[in-house]
Image (cartoon, rainbow, N blue to C red; front, side, top):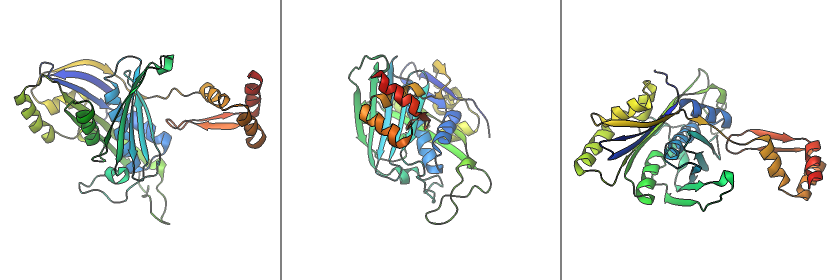
Length: 317
């Protein structure tokens, strides 16, 4: 199995008739799964959504960010990823222990089984962090597959009228004696034995000027190409992944970044959020909780505020 650093590229092909994004995301998906302590199938789902959000985020403008939200009716609940154009992404699942003991018909983890149906929302907003507060654009489509990649392709076709091929994958191993999660009283899955060994994906989009013969070529070539998981596992970098899919078509890399799992939460932000709760709530925390703790949904970081800090908040009002 090859090893490769996380990388994200933006490219064009076939004389600008095709727009491409590809990424290796093994390290950042591994960090997200470690932070949220996700079980295997939840890890696969979260990793796919993080990679998909990262690829979509690479195409937004400066100061914008994109949020991909799978509102699932399956046991995983919500899967959320938020990305910006600088290669930073963060995300979480509502139920990190959502898992499927049985594989699907292809012998893979049954992501569709834990996702189920529901609605996919994609939100683009700009300037929130610097106070511009522009109106966000939000599109939505039904979850038609539950496999994540096909759902994002469906969203791009229906909501943004961009015909796209989306391939997303996560490969993991469980150290010896790691066990599997059980439905009843069998030993629980030992989460610390889970290792993300390959993660990544690509999006290939056809521009309005695309010629019919090129469409026909891509419709033959893309299904015959190796999966993104296979290519990342073999050590291919994003550019090589795209070349493996596109064959002899010319490819021009426009930009390369090193993506990473990043959350802007901090102790100071936690303090500001608690101060916004109001005097009565803060006084109740002092009286009954001997301080306060806030946990960030996106990165699972916990912030503890002492009673002294809470009293300082009251004095500042």
